Length: 445
Image 1 (spheres, rainbow, N blue to C red):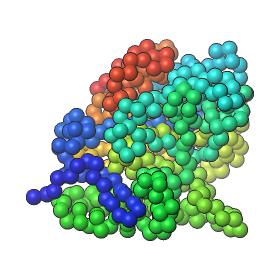
Image 2: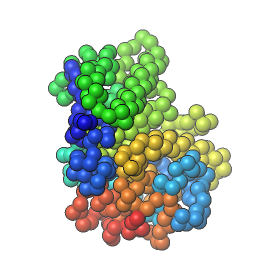
Image 3: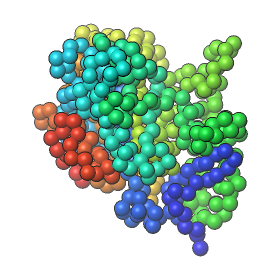
C-alpha cells in the first residue's frame, strides 16, 4: 500500500530542509483541509509590478468578453490566452496628487497595493497603508513556512528623496506590513533560494559553510528513503521537481560567477546576475518553486523600482526607461517603450506557461493561482492613474472565469479587484479596502 503523507512533509539533511510539491499520496485528506475541495491544492496569489506605465494603444486588446484579440504587447501570452483575463477600466485614485503636487511615480508604487494616499515626506515620517499582500499574509501566513515572499530586481534604499520630495521607500516598495513599515524585497537569487530551502536563520553560518554541497545532496538520503515508499507517479513527480531545483541551483551559481568575473580583483559575494533577463527569469523560477512546494501562498515581485531608469540593450533600447517614458509623443521614444513593454510580457509569458505545465491533482499550478501583472500608471508620459494595464492570470482553484477581456465602464477602483482576490485566497472577513466600492463581480465563474 502506498504511504500517505501530510502536505507539510519536509525532507531533511544536515543544515537543510526542503519542502515537497503536491503529491498524489497527499490527497485527498490534507488537500481537502488546505483548500476545502477534494483533491485540490490551496490558492496562491502573486502581485507582479512594473514601473513607468505602458504604451496603452499597444497594450489594450480589441473587442471584449471571450471574443477579443490580444494586443501587440500582450501577444506573447497567446499560448495561454484561455487562462487569464485582461482587465481595463481600473483606477487607483489615491495615486493622484490630491493637492500634493509632483511625485506621481512615488505615489503610483506606494498606492498600488495599499489603496492609500502616501504622506508626502522624504524623512522618517512615512505613512501610506497596509498592502493587500500583507493583509493576506496576516490571515493565511500561518499555513506556510513563509507568510509572504517579496522579490525584486533593483536595489533601493528606504531613506532620502527619490521623487519630488517623496521618500525613496515609496518608489522602491509595494509591500507594506503596517502603514509605516515597508517590507524589504530580496533581489539576490541565492538568498531567496536559501530562504526557501535553507534551515532556520540562526543556522545561517552553517548553511553557508555547507552550501558548496547541493541542497539536494544534503537531503538525498531522506529523499531516497521516502521514494521507496511511494507509487511510481509520485516518484516521477519528485524526480522532476528535483531536476528543476538542481538546474536552478546551477544557473544561480553560473550567474554569480559571471557577476564576479566582471570585477575579478574584488570579492563580490552573493551578486545578482549581471544579465537582467537571466535575473528576472531566475526570480520567476524561484517564485514557481515557492508556490509549487507551498512554502508561501502570497508574493510580490517588482521587475523594476518605480521611476526605474535602466536601459534595455538586449532589445535595442540604450536610453533610460523613465527618461523615455516622458516621450512627448515622439515616435522613436514610443517605439523604444513598446520594446520594453514587450520584453517584460515575454518574461511573464514564460513564467505563466511554466505554472500551467505543472499538474496539481486535476488542475495545474496556474489554475490554483492568481497572478496579477500590472502598473500603478497607465500613460507614463501624462502620469495617468486610471485605465491601468492589468492582467490577472489563473483561475483561483476554479473561482475565476478566464479567457476574457473584462472591459469596465467608467473608473472602477483597483481595490475592488483586491477585495475579490483576498476572498479567493482565503483572507476573508475584509469588508473594505482603500476606496473600494465592493467586490469585482465580473471575475465570478
